[in-house]
Length: 541
Image (tube, rainbow, N blue to C red; front, side, top):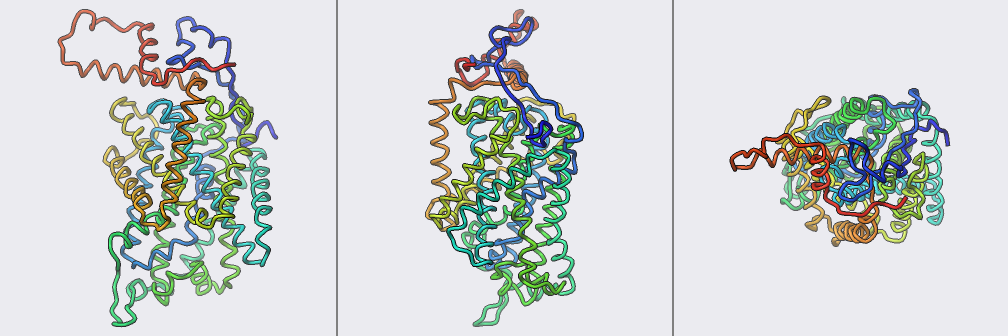
Protein backbone atom coordinates (compact mmCIF):
# COMPACT_ATOMS: atom_id res chain seq x y z
CA UNK A 1 0.00 0.00 0.00
CA UNK A 2 1.44 3.31 -1.04
CA UNK A 3 1.80 5.95 1.63
CA UNK A 4 0.29 8.46 -0.76
CA UNK A 5 -2.66 6.29 -1.79
CA UNK A 6 -5.71 8.16 -3.02
CA UNK A 7 -7.75 6.78 -0.16
CA UNK A 8 -5.29 7.14 2.71
CA UNK A 9 -7.14 8.11 5.84
CA UNK A 10 -6.64 9.07 9.45
CA UNK A 11 -5.40 7.08 12.39
CA UNK A 12 -6.89 7.66 15.81
CA UNK A 13 -5.49 7.04 19.26
CA UNK A 14 -6.26 8.49 22.68
CA UNK A 15 -3.58 10.80 23.89
CA UNK A 16 -2.27 11.72 27.28
CA UNK A 17 -3.97 15.06 26.90
CA UNK A 18 -7.29 13.26 26.99
CA UNK A 19 -6.68 12.24 30.57
CA UNK A 20 -7.12 15.78 31.87
CA UNK A 21 -8.45 19.08 30.64
CA UNK A 22 -6.02 21.11 28.66
CA UNK A 23 -5.05 24.34 30.34
CA UNK A 24 -7.47 27.02 29.25
CA UNK A 25 -8.95 24.64 26.68
CA UNK A 26 -11.69 22.07 26.36
CA UNK A 27 -12.07 19.15 28.72
CA UNK A 28 -11.06 15.61 27.92
CA UNK A 29 -14.62 14.36 27.69
CA UNK A 30 -17.87 15.43 26.10
CA UNK A 31 -20.73 14.17 28.21
CA UNK A 32 -18.15 11.71 29.59
CA UNK A 33 -17.29 10.61 26.04
CA UNK A 34 -13.53 10.44 25.54
CA UNK A 35 -11.88 12.96 23.23
CA UNK A 36 -9.10 11.61 21.03
CA UNK A 37 -6.50 13.27 18.86
CA UNK A 38 -6.61 12.66 15.12
CA UNK A 39 -3.32 12.16 13.32
CA UNK A 40 -3.74 12.95 9.65
CA UNK A 41 -0.90 11.56 7.55
CA UNK A 42 0.40 13.94 4.94
CA UNK A 43 -0.87 13.38 1.41
CA UNK A 44 1.30 14.52 -1.46
CA UNK A 45 -0.37 17.48 -3.21
CA UNK A 46 -0.17 15.62 -6.52
CA UNK A 47 -2.31 12.84 -5.03
CA UNK A 48 -5.17 15.09 -3.96
CA UNK A 49 -8.44 15.37 -5.85
CA UNK A 50 -9.78 18.61 -7.29
CA UNK A 51 -13.22 19.73 -8.50
CA UNK A 52 -12.93 17.81 -11.77
CA UNK A 53 -11.95 14.61 -9.99
CA UNK A 54 -14.94 14.87 -7.63
CA UNK A 55 -17.18 15.40 -10.66
CA UNK A 56 -15.64 12.35 -12.33
CA UNK A 57 -16.14 10.19 -9.23
CA UNK A 58 -19.81 11.17 -9.18
CA UNK A 59 -20.25 10.27 -12.83
CA UNK A 60 -18.50 6.92 -12.44
CA UNK A 61 -20.52 5.98 -9.34
CA UNK A 62 -23.96 6.86 -10.70
CA UNK A 63 -24.03 6.96 -14.51
CA UNK A 64 -24.51 3.21 -14.98
CA UNK A 65 -27.91 3.36 -13.32
CA UNK A 66 -29.25 5.46 -16.20
CA UNK A 67 -28.61 2.75 -18.80
CA UNK A 68 -30.79 -0.12 -17.72
CA UNK A 69 -34.24 -1.29 -16.63
CA UNK A 70 -36.16 1.95 -15.97
CA UNK A 71 -37.70 2.25 -19.45
CA UNK A 72 -40.24 -0.48 -18.69
CA UNK A 73 -42.02 2.02 -16.41
CA UNK A 74 -43.17 3.78 -19.58
CA UNK A 75 -45.86 1.10 -19.72
CA UNK A 76 -47.97 3.63 -17.80
CA UNK A 77 -47.41 6.22 -20.52
CA UNK A 78 -45.04 9.08 -21.18
CA UNK A 79 -46.62 11.69 -18.91
CA UNK A 80 -46.63 9.74 -15.59
CA UNK A 81 -43.04 8.54 -15.76
CA UNK A 82 -41.57 11.72 -17.21
CA UNK A 83 -43.32 13.89 -14.61
CA UNK A 84 -42.18 11.56 -11.82
CA UNK A 85 -38.63 11.66 -13.22
CA UNK A 86 -38.72 15.45 -13.37
CA UNK A 87 -39.93 15.63 -9.76
CA UNK A 88 -37.22 13.26 -8.55
CA UNK A 89 -34.54 14.98 -10.62
CA UNK A 90 -35.32 18.42 -9.22
CA UNK A 91 -35.47 16.93 -5.74
CA UNK A 92 -31.94 15.56 -6.09
CA UNK A 93 -30.66 18.89 -7.43
CA UNK A 94 -32.05 20.65 -4.35
CA UNK A 95 -30.95 17.92 -1.94
CA UNK A 96 -27.37 17.96 -3.20
CA UNK A 97 -27.32 21.75 -2.90
CA UNK A 98 -28.44 21.46 0.74
CA UNK A 99 -25.85 18.88 1.77
CA UNK A 100 -23.14 20.64 -0.25
CA UNK A 101 -23.71 23.77 1.82
CA UNK A 102 -23.36 21.99 5.17
CA UNK A 103 -20.79 19.30 4.33
CA UNK A 104 -17.90 21.74 4.73
CA UNK A 105 -19.16 23.09 8.06
CA UNK A 106 -18.43 19.95 10.09
CA UNK A 107 -15.43 17.58 9.98
CA UNK A 108 -16.29 14.24 8.41
CA UNK A 109 -18.89 15.48 5.93
CA UNK A 110 -22.43 14.13 6.31
CA UNK A 111 -21.40 11.61 9.00
CA UNK A 112 -19.71 14.29 11.10
CA UNK A 113 -22.71 16.59 10.60
CA UNK A 114 -25.11 13.94 11.91
CA UNK A 115 -23.02 13.30 15.03
CA UNK A 116 -22.47 16.97 15.83
CA UNK A 117 -25.93 18.32 15.05
CA UNK A 118 -28.39 15.43 15.42
CA UNK A 119 -26.65 13.51 18.21
CA UNK A 120 -24.48 10.42 18.61
CA UNK A 121 -27.21 7.78 18.30
CA UNK A 122 -28.84 9.34 15.19
CA UNK A 123 -25.35 9.82 13.76
CA UNK A 124 -24.58 6.14 14.28
CA UNK A 125 -27.84 4.95 12.69
CA UNK A 126 -27.44 7.27 9.72
CA UNK A 127 -23.85 6.12 9.28
CA UNK A 128 -25.04 2.49 9.23
CA UNK A 129 -27.81 3.29 6.75
CA UNK A 130 -25.37 5.12 4.48
CA UNK A 131 -23.06 2.12 4.60
CA UNK A 132 -25.96 -0.18 3.74
CA UNK A 133 -26.91 2.08 0.84
CA UNK A 134 -23.43 2.36 -0.68
CA UNK A 135 -22.46 -1.27 -0.16
CA UNK A 136 -25.80 -2.45 -1.57
CA UNK A 137 -25.47 -0.27 -4.66
CA UNK A 138 -22.01 -1.73 -5.22
CA UNK A 139 -23.37 -5.27 -4.83
CA UNK A 140 -26.24 -4.59 -7.24
CA UNK A 141 -23.75 -3.48 -9.90
CA UNK A 142 -21.47 -6.46 -9.38
CA UNK A 143 -24.47 -8.79 -9.60
CA UNK A 144 -25.58 -7.14 -12.84
CA UNK A 145 -22.17 -7.42 -14.52
CA UNK A 146 -21.79 -11.03 -13.39
CA UNK A 147 -25.28 -12.03 -14.52
CA UNK A 148 -24.75 -10.39 -17.89
CA UNK A 149 -21.38 -12.08 -18.44
CA UNK A 150 -22.62 -15.55 -17.48
CA UNK A 151 -25.68 -15.20 -19.72
CA UNK A 152 -23.70 -13.84 -22.67
CA UNK A 153 -20.98 -16.49 -22.57
CA UNK A 154 -23.24 -19.31 -21.40
CA UNK A 155 -21.16 -20.01 -18.29
CA UNK A 156 -22.32 -22.25 -15.47
CA UNK A 157 -24.16 -20.49 -12.62
CA UNK A 158 -21.64 -21.87 -10.14
CA UNK A 159 -18.92 -19.59 -11.54
CA UNK A 160 -20.71 -16.47 -10.28
CA UNK A 161 -19.15 -16.40 -6.77
CA UNK A 162 -15.70 -16.48 -8.38
CA UNK A 163 -16.60 -13.58 -10.69
CA UNK A 164 -17.83 -11.53 -7.72
CA UNK A 165 -14.55 -12.17 -5.92
CA UNK A 166 -12.48 -11.19 -8.96
CA UNK A 167 -14.32 -7.88 -9.30
CA UNK A 168 -13.94 -7.00 -5.62
CA UNK A 169 -10.23 -7.85 -5.63
CA UNK A 170 -9.50 -5.93 -8.84
CA UNK A 171 -11.37 -2.82 -7.69
CA UNK A 172 -9.62 -2.77 -4.31
CA UNK A 173 -6.23 -3.22 -5.98
CA UNK A 174 -6.91 -0.35 -8.40
CA UNK A 175 -7.92 1.99 -5.61
CA UNK A 176 -4.74 1.31 -3.69
CA UNK A 177 -2.64 3.02 -6.36
CA UNK A 178 -1.16 6.50 -6.02
CA UNK A 179 -3.81 9.20 -5.99
CA UNK A 180 -2.54 10.95 -9.10
CA UNK A 181 -2.97 7.72 -11.08
CA UNK A 182 -6.38 6.92 -9.60
CA UNK A 183 -7.76 10.37 -10.39
CA UNK A 184 -6.43 10.39 -13.94
CA UNK A 185 -8.01 7.00 -14.46
CA UNK A 186 -11.25 8.30 -12.92
CA UNK A 187 -11.43 11.18 -15.40
CA UNK A 188 -10.93 8.85 -18.36
CA UNK A 189 -13.40 6.33 -16.96
CA UNK A 190 -16.01 9.06 -16.47
CA UNK A 191 -15.80 9.93 -20.17
CA UNK A 192 -16.16 6.25 -21.05
CA UNK A 193 -19.25 6.03 -18.83
CA UNK A 194 -20.79 9.10 -20.51
CA UNK A 195 -19.97 8.02 -24.06
CA UNK A 196 -22.93 5.62 -24.60
CA UNK A 197 -25.39 8.33 -23.55
CA UNK A 198 -23.84 10.93 -25.87
CA UNK A 199 -23.78 8.56 -28.86
CA UNK A 200 -27.31 7.32 -28.17
CA UNK A 201 -28.88 10.77 -27.78
CA UNK A 202 -27.19 12.51 -30.69
CA UNK A 203 -27.28 9.47 -32.97
CA UNK A 204 -31.03 9.12 -32.44
CA UNK A 205 -31.98 12.74 -33.19
CA UNK A 206 -32.92 12.17 -36.88
CA UNK A 207 -35.41 9.47 -35.87
CA UNK A 208 -37.18 11.19 -32.97
CA UNK A 209 -40.88 12.06 -33.03
CA UNK A 210 -42.38 12.44 -29.56
CA UNK A 211 -45.86 13.33 -30.82
CA UNK A 212 -46.12 10.10 -32.79
CA UNK A 213 -44.04 7.67 -30.74
CA UNK A 214 -44.64 8.97 -27.22
CA UNK A 215 -48.25 7.78 -27.03
CA UNK A 216 -49.69 4.39 -26.14
CA UNK A 217 -52.12 2.82 -28.60
CA UNK A 218 -55.08 0.72 -27.52
CA UNK A 219 -54.95 -2.41 -29.76
CA UNK A 220 -58.74 -2.83 -29.66
CA UNK A 221 -59.97 0.71 -30.25
CA UNK A 222 -56.83 2.19 -31.82
CA UNK A 223 -57.18 5.15 -29.47
CA UNK A 224 -54.02 6.86 -28.22
CA UNK A 225 -53.21 8.06 -24.73
CA UNK A 226 -50.33 9.76 -22.94
CA UNK A 227 -51.10 8.12 -19.61
CA UNK A 228 -52.98 5.20 -18.15
CA UNK A 229 -53.48 3.59 -14.77
CA UNK A 230 -54.23 5.06 -11.36
CA UNK A 231 -52.14 6.72 -8.65
CA UNK A 232 -50.86 3.31 -7.59
CA UNK A 233 -49.67 2.01 -10.96
CA UNK A 234 -48.94 5.36 -12.63
CA UNK A 235 -47.08 7.00 -9.75
CA UNK A 236 -46.12 5.03 -6.65
CA UNK A 237 -45.19 1.83 -8.48
CA UNK A 238 -42.80 3.58 -10.84
CA UNK A 239 -41.34 6.14 -8.41
CA UNK A 240 -38.32 4.06 -7.21
CA UNK A 241 -37.19 3.66 -10.83
CA UNK A 242 -36.75 7.43 -11.09
CA UNK A 243 -33.91 7.34 -8.54
CA UNK A 244 -31.57 5.28 -10.74
CA UNK A 245 -30.21 8.43 -12.35
CA UNK A 246 -28.94 9.92 -9.08
CA UNK A 247 -28.99 7.47 -6.17
CA UNK A 248 -25.72 7.55 -4.24
CA UNK A 249 -24.48 10.91 -5.52
CA UNK A 250 -24.49 12.16 -1.91
CA UNK A 251 -21.59 9.78 -1.21
CA UNK A 252 -19.25 12.46 -2.55
CA UNK A 253 -19.71 14.49 0.65
CA UNK A 254 -17.95 11.73 2.62
CA UNK A 255 -14.70 11.78 0.64
CA UNK A 256 -13.18 14.98 2.03
CA UNK A 257 -9.94 13.60 3.50
CA UNK A 258 -7.94 13.42 0.27
CA UNK A 259 -9.33 16.48 -1.51
CA UNK A 260 -7.44 19.71 -2.08
CA UNK A 261 -9.47 22.50 -0.46
CA UNK A 262 -12.48 20.25 0.29
CA UNK A 263 -14.71 23.15 1.37
CA UNK A 264 -14.49 24.40 -2.22
CA UNK A 265 -13.91 21.29 -4.34
CA UNK A 266 -16.42 18.85 -2.82
CA UNK A 267 -19.54 21.08 -3.01
CA UNK A 268 -18.80 22.34 -6.50
CA UNK A 269 -17.77 18.96 -7.85
CA UNK A 270 -20.86 17.33 -6.37
CA UNK A 271 -23.23 19.99 -7.70
CA UNK A 272 -21.60 19.83 -11.15
CA UNK A 273 -21.97 16.04 -11.23
CA UNK A 274 -25.64 16.31 -10.23
CA UNK A 275 -26.43 18.81 -12.97
CA UNK A 276 -24.65 16.61 -15.52
CA UNK A 277 -26.71 13.63 -14.38
CA UNK A 278 -29.85 15.80 -14.50
CA UNK A 279 -29.27 16.72 -18.15
CA UNK A 280 -28.32 13.17 -19.08
CA UNK A 281 -31.27 11.43 -17.41
CA UNK A 282 -33.93 13.77 -18.76
CA UNK A 283 -32.39 13.59 -22.24
CA UNK A 284 -32.55 9.78 -22.09
CA UNK A 285 -36.16 9.98 -20.89
CA UNK A 286 -37.15 12.10 -23.88
CA UNK A 287 -35.21 10.12 -26.46
CA UNK A 288 -36.50 6.72 -25.29
CA UNK A 289 -40.09 8.02 -25.48
CA UNK A 290 -39.61 9.54 -28.94
CA UNK A 291 -37.88 6.56 -30.56
CA UNK A 292 -39.69 4.53 -33.24
CA UNK A 293 -41.73 2.40 -33.43
CA UNK A 294 -43.27 3.83 -30.23
CA UNK A 295 -43.61 3.33 -26.48
CA UNK A 296 -45.76 0.23 -26.88
CA UNK A 297 -42.60 -1.49 -28.13
CA UNK A 298 -39.67 0.46 -26.72
CA UNK A 299 -40.84 0.18 -23.10
CA UNK A 300 -40.29 -3.58 -23.43
CA UNK A 301 -36.66 -3.30 -24.63
CA UNK A 302 -34.36 -5.04 -22.16
CA UNK A 303 -31.46 -2.81 -23.23
CA UNK A 304 -32.94 0.38 -24.63
CA UNK A 305 -29.57 1.69 -25.88
CA UNK A 306 -29.52 -0.99 -28.57
CA UNK A 307 -32.26 0.58 -30.68
CA UNK A 308 -30.77 4.08 -30.85
CA UNK A 309 -27.18 2.95 -31.35
CA UNK A 310 -28.31 0.60 -34.10
CA UNK A 311 -30.37 3.22 -35.95
CA UNK A 312 -27.94 6.09 -35.47
CA UNK A 313 -24.56 4.38 -35.75
CA UNK A 314 -25.32 0.94 -37.15
CA UNK A 315 -23.89 -0.84 -34.11
CA UNK A 316 -24.89 -4.41 -33.38
CA UNK A 317 -26.84 -5.24 -30.23
CA UNK A 318 -23.80 -7.04 -28.80
CA UNK A 319 -21.57 -3.98 -29.20
CA UNK A 320 -24.26 -1.67 -27.81
CA UNK A 321 -24.74 -3.85 -24.74
CA UNK A 322 -21.03 -4.15 -24.01
CA UNK A 323 -20.67 -0.37 -24.26
CA UNK A 324 -22.73 0.04 -21.09
CA UNK A 325 -20.79 -2.56 -19.06
CA UNK A 326 -17.96 -0.14 -18.06
CA UNK A 327 -20.57 2.20 -16.56
CA UNK A 328 -22.11 -0.71 -14.65
CA UNK A 329 -18.69 -1.69 -13.31
CA UNK A 330 -18.04 1.95 -12.48
CA UNK A 331 -21.05 2.01 -10.16
CA UNK A 332 -19.39 -0.60 -7.97
CA UNK A 333 -15.93 0.93 -8.39
CA UNK A 334 -17.20 4.42 -7.54
CA UNK A 335 -18.86 3.41 -4.27
CA UNK A 336 -15.79 1.62 -2.88
CA UNK A 337 -14.09 4.88 -1.89
CA UNK A 338 -17.06 6.39 0.02
CA UNK A 339 -17.97 3.24 1.89
CA UNK A 340 -14.34 2.63 2.84
CA UNK A 341 -14.01 6.19 4.15
CA UNK A 342 -17.25 5.92 6.11
CA UNK A 343 -16.31 2.53 7.56
CA UNK A 344 -12.95 3.90 8.71
CA UNK A 345 -14.57 7.00 10.23
CA UNK A 346 -17.04 4.90 12.23
CA UNK A 347 -14.27 2.56 13.37
CA UNK A 348 -12.16 5.50 14.50
CA UNK A 349 -15.14 6.65 16.57
CA UNK A 350 -15.01 3.21 18.24
CA UNK A 351 -18.39 2.27 16.77
CA UNK A 352 -17.39 -0.96 15.04
CA UNK A 353 -16.32 -4.26 16.65
CA UNK A 354 -12.69 -4.24 17.77
CA UNK A 355 -12.00 -7.70 16.31
CA UNK A 356 -12.28 -6.21 12.81
CA UNK A 357 -9.01 -4.40 13.48
CA UNK A 358 -10.02 -1.26 11.57
CA UNK A 359 -9.67 1.38 14.28
CA UNK A 360 -6.50 3.42 14.07
CA UNK A 361 -5.48 2.15 10.64
CA UNK A 362 -3.30 4.59 8.68
CA UNK A 363 -5.16 3.71 5.44
CA UNK A 364 -8.65 2.54 4.51
CA UNK A 365 -7.53 -0.67 2.84
CA UNK A 366 -8.72 -2.85 5.73
CA UNK A 367 -11.96 -0.88 5.99
CA UNK A 368 -12.52 -1.37 2.28
CA UNK A 369 -11.89 -5.11 2.55
CA UNK A 370 -14.24 -5.53 5.53
CA UNK A 371 -17.03 -3.51 3.90
CA UNK A 372 -16.53 -5.41 0.65
CA UNK A 373 -16.90 -8.71 2.50
CA UNK A 374 -20.32 -7.52 3.64
CA UNK A 375 -21.11 -6.63 0.02
CA UNK A 376 -19.98 -10.09 -1.07
CA UNK A 377 -22.33 -11.63 1.51
CA UNK A 378 -25.20 -9.64 -0.02
CA UNK A 379 -24.28 -11.19 -3.36
CA UNK A 380 -24.33 -14.66 -1.78
CA UNK A 381 -27.80 -14.11 -0.30
CA UNK A 382 -28.98 -12.82 -3.68
CA UNK A 383 -27.58 -15.94 -5.35
CA UNK A 384 -29.77 -18.19 -3.22
CA UNK A 385 -32.82 -15.90 -3.12
CA UNK A 386 -34.18 -14.34 -6.30
CA UNK A 387 -36.71 -12.38 -4.24
CA UNK A 388 -33.94 -10.79 -2.19
CA UNK A 389 -31.94 -9.95 -5.31
CA UNK A 390 -34.97 -8.28 -6.89
CA UNK A 391 -35.55 -6.15 -3.78
CA UNK A 392 -31.91 -5.38 -2.90
CA UNK A 393 -32.01 -2.05 -4.69
CA UNK A 394 -35.28 -1.12 -2.96
CA UNK A 395 -33.66 -1.91 0.40
CA UNK A 396 -30.95 0.56 -0.54
CA UNK A 397 -33.55 3.15 -1.50
CA UNK A 398 -35.36 2.81 1.85
CA UNK A 399 -32.06 3.43 3.64
CA UNK A 400 -31.37 6.35 1.30
CA UNK A 401 -34.77 7.95 1.99
CA UNK A 402 -34.03 8.11 5.71
CA UNK A 403 -30.58 9.56 5.01
CA UNK A 404 -31.95 12.17 2.59
CA UNK A 405 -34.55 13.41 5.07
CA UNK A 406 -32.15 13.40 8.04
CA UNK A 407 -29.30 15.15 6.26
CA UNK A 408 -31.69 17.79 4.98
CA UNK A 409 -32.92 18.22 8.56
CA UNK A 410 -29.31 18.95 9.51
CA UNK A 411 -29.27 21.64 6.82
CA UNK A 412 -32.47 23.14 8.26
CA UNK A 413 -30.98 23.20 11.76
CA UNK A 414 -27.85 24.97 10.57
CA UNK A 415 -30.00 27.54 8.76
CA UNK A 416 -32.42 28.09 11.67
CA UNK A 417 -31.37 26.90 15.12
CA UNK A 418 -27.64 27.53 14.70
CA UNK A 419 -27.71 30.21 12.00
CA UNK A 420 -24.18 29.47 10.82
CA UNK A 421 -22.71 32.04 8.47
CA UNK A 422 -22.09 30.53 5.05
CA UNK A 423 -18.73 31.53 3.62
CA UNK A 424 -18.47 28.85 0.92
CA UNK A 425 -21.12 27.27 -1.26
CA UNK A 426 -24.67 28.32 -0.37
CA UNK A 427 -27.79 26.52 -1.54
CA UNK A 428 -29.92 28.89 -3.66
CA UNK A 429 -33.09 26.96 -2.76
CA UNK A 430 -33.18 27.78 0.95
CA UNK A 431 -35.59 26.24 3.44
CA UNK A 432 -38.37 25.88 0.87
CA UNK A 433 -36.09 23.58 -1.09
CA UNK A 434 -35.42 21.51 2.02
CA UNK A 435 -39.15 21.07 2.62
CA UNK A 436 -39.54 19.96 -0.99
CA UNK A 437 -36.85 17.32 -0.47
CA UNK A 438 -38.71 16.07 2.62
CA UNK A 439 -41.95 15.83 0.64
CA UNK A 440 -40.40 13.85 -2.23
CA UNK A 441 -38.45 11.62 0.19
CA UNK A 442 -41.70 10.79 1.99
CA UNK A 443 -43.41 9.87 -1.28
CA UNK A 444 -40.43 7.70 -2.25
CA UNK A 445 -40.46 5.98 1.13
CA UNK A 446 -44.22 5.32 0.86
CA UNK A 447 -43.79 3.91 -2.65
CA UNK A 448 -41.81 1.04 -1.12
CA UNK A 449 -43.22 0.82 2.41
CA UNK A 450 -46.80 1.04 1.10
CA UNK A 451 -46.59 -2.25 -0.77
CA UNK A 452 -46.71 -0.75 -4.27
CA UNK A 453 -43.67 -2.75 -5.48
CA UNK A 454 -45.20 -6.19 -4.97
CA UNK A 455 -42.22 -7.43 -2.96
CA UNK A 456 -44.32 -8.76 -0.05
CA UNK A 457 -42.74 -6.16 2.23
CA UNK A 458 -39.23 -7.64 1.97
CA UNK A 459 -37.52 -4.28 1.39
CA UNK A 460 -39.13 -2.32 4.21
CA UNK A 461 -38.96 -5.23 6.67
CA UNK A 462 -35.28 -5.84 5.87
CA UNK A 463 -34.45 -2.16 6.40
CA UNK A 464 -36.49 -2.05 9.62
CA UNK A 465 -34.79 -5.19 10.94
CA UNK A 466 -31.40 -3.69 10.08
CA UNK A 467 -32.19 -0.55 12.10
CA UNK A 468 -33.39 -2.64 15.06
CA UNK A 469 -30.23 -4.77 15.06
CA UNK A 470 -27.99 -1.71 14.79
CA UNK A 471 -29.93 0.02 17.57
CA UNK A 472 -29.49 -2.94 19.90
CA UNK A 473 -25.79 -3.10 19.00
CA UNK A 474 -25.34 0.61 19.71
CA UNK A 475 -26.94 0.57 23.16
CA UNK A 476 -25.28 -2.66 24.21
CA UNK A 477 -21.81 -2.22 22.72
CA UNK A 478 -21.12 1.30 21.42
CA UNK A 479 -22.68 3.70 23.88
CA UNK A 480 -20.09 3.00 26.57
CA UNK A 481 -16.99 3.14 24.40
CA UNK A 482 -17.51 5.62 21.53
CA UNK A 483 -15.13 8.55 21.17
CA UNK A 484 -15.05 11.96 19.50
CA UNK A 485 -12.14 13.63 17.80
CA UNK A 486 -11.03 17.07 18.90
CA UNK A 487 -12.42 18.45 15.63
CA UNK A 488 -15.81 16.89 16.38
CA UNK A 489 -15.63 18.23 19.93
CA UNK A 490 -15.00 21.71 18.57
CA UNK A 491 -18.16 21.45 16.45
CA UNK A 492 -20.25 20.06 19.32
CA UNK A 493 -18.96 22.84 21.58
CA UNK A 494 -19.81 25.51 19.02
CA UNK A 495 -23.30 24.17 18.34
CA UNK A 496 -24.02 23.77 22.06
CA UNK A 497 -23.16 27.40 22.74
CA UNK A 498 -25.27 28.51 19.77
CA UNK A 499 -28.21 26.49 21.04
CA UNK A 500 -27.82 27.90 24.54
CA UNK A 501 -27.64 31.48 23.28
CA UNK A 502 -30.77 30.93 21.23
CA UNK A 503 -32.58 29.60 24.29
CA UNK A 504 -31.50 32.68 26.27
CA UNK A 505 -32.86 34.98 23.60
CA UNK A 506 -36.22 33.25 23.79
CA UNK A 507 -36.64 33.81 27.50
CA UNK A 508 -39.52 36.13 28.27
CA UNK A 509 -38.39 37.09 31.75
CA UNK A 510 -36.78 40.43 32.41
CA UNK A 511 -32.99 40.50 32.43
CA UNK A 512 -31.32 40.19 35.80
CA UNK A 513 -27.91 41.28 36.93
CA UNK A 514 -26.63 37.73 36.64
CA UNK A 515 -27.99 37.33 33.11
CA UNK A 516 -26.06 40.41 31.98
CA UNK A 517 -22.72 39.01 33.05
CA UNK A 518 -20.61 37.50 30.25
CA UNK A 519 -20.32 33.73 30.17
CA UNK A 520 -16.98 32.47 31.40
CA UNK A 521 -14.90 29.93 29.54
CA UNK A 522 -15.52 27.38 32.29
CA UNK A 523 -19.26 27.92 31.88
CA UNK A 524 -18.98 27.36 28.14
CA UNK A 525 -17.20 24.06 28.72
CA UNK A 526 -19.93 23.10 31.16
CA UNK A 527 -22.55 23.95 28.57
CA UNK A 528 -20.87 21.79 25.97
CA UNK A 529 -21.03 18.87 28.40
CA UNK A 530 -24.64 19.62 29.26
CA UNK A 531 -25.87 19.70 25.70
CA UNK A 532 -23.82 16.71 24.49
CA UNK A 533 -26.50 14.05 24.26
CA UNK A 534 -24.85 10.73 25.06
CA UNK A 535 -23.68 10.03 28.58
CA UNK A 536 -20.96 7.45 28.21
CA UNK A 537 -17.74 6.60 29.97
CA UNK A 538 -14.31 7.21 28.43
CA UNK A 539 -13.18 4.68 25.86
CA UNK A 540 -10.34 2.35 26.79
CA UNK A 541 -7.01 3.08 25.15
